[in-house]
Image 1: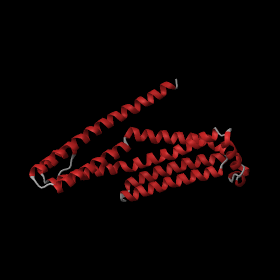
Image 2: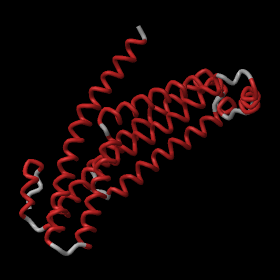
Image 3: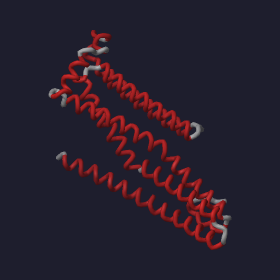
Image 4: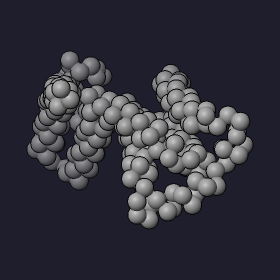
Length: 244
């Protein structure tokens, strides 16, 4: 049975159950295509948010109880004792770790796209990599002096957040994943309706609803692609105009 997007109407003459399966597979496959970048960008943005919060709180910690906690912990630093002869370069190790980890995650993501693993396995590998990044961030907080780490954490946090959020917003990873998963669920409900119904008129009504789902899906895809690109550009221009 043809499933080409240019010939979707061709399944109208086929068995209704088969038609439902074809459309459900199409929506599910599209949701799966968006899932990895959706997961990656959202998790990176969450980790970046933690870095931003840490950086802002530390920089603001010269007063109140935050400053007292900071002084208590930073008096016991591991890195300054282990690498005391290279103290000027200590904080650069954090920058190097961030760059190397981001490169590693990018390479792993590109590799997963070419390997024939299951979607669940690919997602698990990616999430575990991001968990490692979270652990490294916590270890960095316990290792480096906070007053040195804060500006670096704030810089990388802002950079990672902007790139992750902008990529997700421009290419519609989360929106595409959520939309296609939602339509796949709607198709499953239509299939349940078919199993409950027995008369020909009900089957005809389900087929019409199936066509309406396809039509609405393609209209939303068009609006999302154009709308996301325009809104992304307008946001960037608005941000640049405020810096002048």
